[in-house]
Length: 606
Image 1 (cartoon, rainbow, N blue to C red):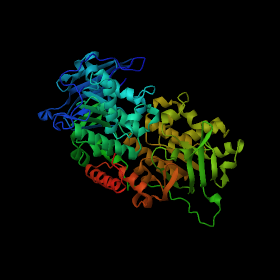
Image 2: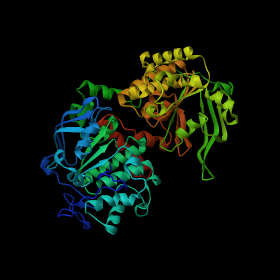
Image 3: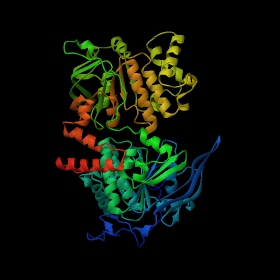
Image 4: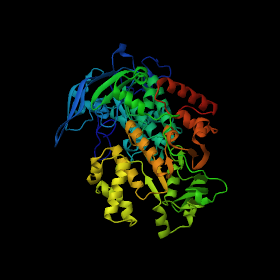
């Protein structure tokens, strides 16, 4: 499904037979347009509607017909969005957030049954046919999706995708559409816009792709934008930039925004009002300060209590002290002058430069930085999945760079790994017992009875019932699957554990439970851990020390309390200033602090 209409096999949206009317924007606006209801460049500012909502959900219920019967997804939800207002719809996976928002765009599948009304201005969206829905999509309501790479067509240039909506709604054609597309890119902060129109989505960074999706969303001056987890796929500094951009555009255009998210920091940063959903029902709603500073419903209280915060700590085991006189064998991991390269079309591309760090037994080292900083690349090198081009990398004093064949295979037995997405990292054809014991089978450790006994021990350790041993991954929740991933990583009692964004795919309350369990396991098994994360609050809670990376280079390293609470480098300060806080007043202060920091560095907020 495209943003503005259904996609046919050719990848372009169905044509909308709407000719330019009296309110069309085909003519270039003058520079002195009225800021109250006039146009701003290539987009239009909307009136306030005398306090009337631009989008109104009235007793909306949604059920789905399935082979197992009817499933209730949304139950009697009612709330409004006014022009220039941001309403956050929050809740965990399965709460009904995305289904509720999809009713406003008519994007529900054929097996959905909708009751109640969804009023977009003076139109009831639930009563529109396919042609009527195509007329409102993009022109009156637009969507910003979670993953920009799937929202954009990879075989069309960015310019073609931006002008598509303008053409479909009869707003602009030919060179005029190209001019508008370039101005839209400039509005969302993309430099050299005219030339970049000819480029494809893969030639832009993740943050730039999300800016393009936002440019597409505002291209036809919609009265309301539905932003479905618009920053989930982005790192913390890019997230802050995108939120600044949305806030600025909202203020300029007086557009209403329905923000769907599970990130309470994003809610505190953006929302005017909050609606909390649980199992398809609206359990609490109100002004953002009221809901987030004095939540009334137990579920809202639990959600907010689960959010990791900078300065909070979990009980983790203290690492074994290593003195200067001890040998290198005393370190679980030691990197010295480590450089890593990729082969690209026959050329060496160095992506990690001269990195030095050590991790003692029982110590957690947090690797933090933006996307592309080299965090996961270093983790892959420790796993032996990438060669070290220069320098050394030792596990318990043994140099990985000099190992090959059986020796490297035996070393991997001493290293466990927990991946970001448990659904992708667990074999769907294996029952849970076989998933956990697979490392023992591969390395020929023990017989079937001892392997299953180890599986039961680890299920106890990760606080799952032994009865799940014969179930399959798809039968478990996301949090349960990640517990299984951690159990599998510990099967061979590794000396080193690599945790690559182990909680970023989980809901906030599930994340809190998994982090508590992870801290308990670390205290019990005392493994050395490389903990890769873009969530600074999680790193602050777990890690003993932190290594900050930027563009494959080491920026800052030291004890967690020192690096994250008294940073020496501007880049670390920028990361910390971008990390959202789940309190509106605290977040406002952080936003002001971030703007001042960027101005002092000669940079713009977005």
